[in-house]
Length: 198
Length: 198
DNA sequence: ATTTTTTGATTGACCCGTCAATCAAAAAAT
DNA sequence: ATTTTTTGATTGACGGGTCAATCAAAAAAT
Image (cartoon, rainbow over all chains, first blue to last red; front, side):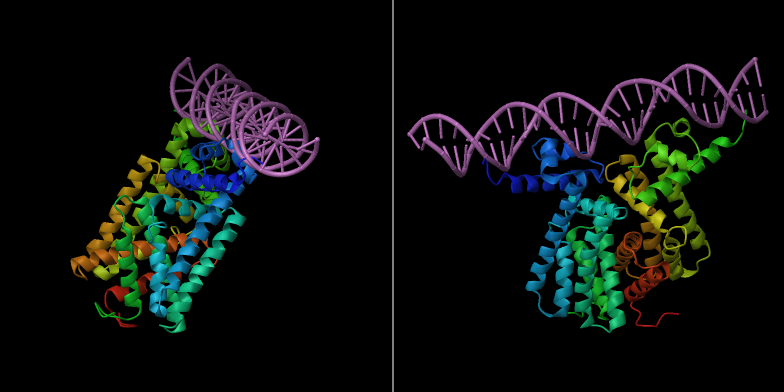
């Protein structure tokens, strides 16, 4: 066997190249040729490892989702108290890896792709539900059930909105500003006045 | 001159068909053939009127932007007081025309398109700045300048986020719920406690 | 008759996916 | 240790198909 163990490396290279290419272009309309070229191999090799283009796309989505989940889980591990758990989710969302423009553009592309691709929709559904339950579970210990649901929906929307604005507007909010906006909104929902929180 | 007035009708038909096709597919990767077919004409006629595909896309964006601006302006006309002006912007954003799933999907597609198309970015920039100034101007009469800026950024992000979630998640927030979330957030930023506003 | 509207046919480019063939390293056999 | 065999890694070339855009000419209206 030659160069044993090349497959996982190649797959990862292709996924990285796919994120970069898709994110830079802001579209799924990128040829396998360009992705493979960026990863330093011929298109045929990409097909050899992934079968077809759809599978390249799905594998790339899975990688993005897994990476995000990993960071959230990591943040939750060191969080203490419900408020800390909410903040951990927020901070994971705006961590350097997740908040890179290219990464966010890729996320948005996949959001839209899910609009017409059932497998992609299934993947995103899992992520969405997990994120939501993380937020709701923590908020329920701080607020009445109804308000917790509203607060979770609001926070989730703000996060998504800040993503959109960061990725698409030059001079959009940076990570620090984004986190501050989320924290402020959380404070207000928890009924704390200016500067009142620990 | 024969068939006077055919051109504007054809152009409008093509723009409507473009919104529908792009919105349904959630992608700009739709052929001129399909758009023209949906509008009841041959692809060649679309090229005759618009020159190339990019111009079809840009004209479609301009139409969406103009329509949105029209609705905001209309709402502002009947609004009284700064709080009313903020709510007018919110309500225009979630009006039936703007909050239709297909329309929102088309919006998101154009957001992403702007990511790699300077002309599209220019168009969206105009819209973004106008929306922002509408919000900031009204909020400045209700809050200190710094807080007004944060509140505007927050509201704008929430609106965008709710758009994303409504268009892409089955069972996402409907218009009523979206408006309620925005109002609640606005209340909190204005420092009003539960049920305190007029 | 002239001008606009409309389209069928065509072209060149590009893309996805396949396939046969090549290459190089590991395993087996001697 | 040397040779042979096996097998994954890799690619160039190609087919079927689609798309954007062009063009010449027909249809329709004035």
